[in-house]
Length: 114
Image 1 (tube, rainbow, N blue to C red):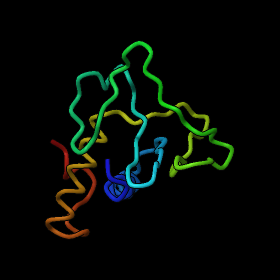
Image 2: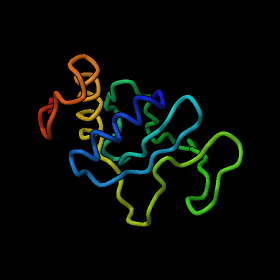
Image 3: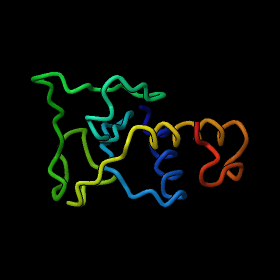
Image 4: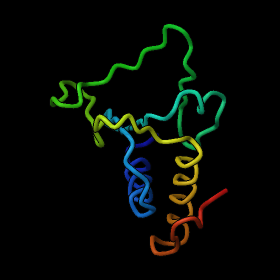
């Protein structure tokens, strides 16, 4: 998804007190890491979903080192093994759309639930 959308979604998740989920930034786009078993076949608005096909690899920089090249962690993995569930991410992305149309103070926790 576009990096600006991911940053806004992260802000919404923080406002909702949702624990941070690793977020990989590759310049103009970002990628949240979500639970693979829950993500298969799930439509994430504004996102591209890797479905865990055998041999599929996502190359990520080590969380404890600065990344070379174009990939870096906006929110690095913290060792907790916490990954965002796709439903919460979809709700946060919906909230971003609402905030863009109605203004940033238009939303409180839970109001974006689908």
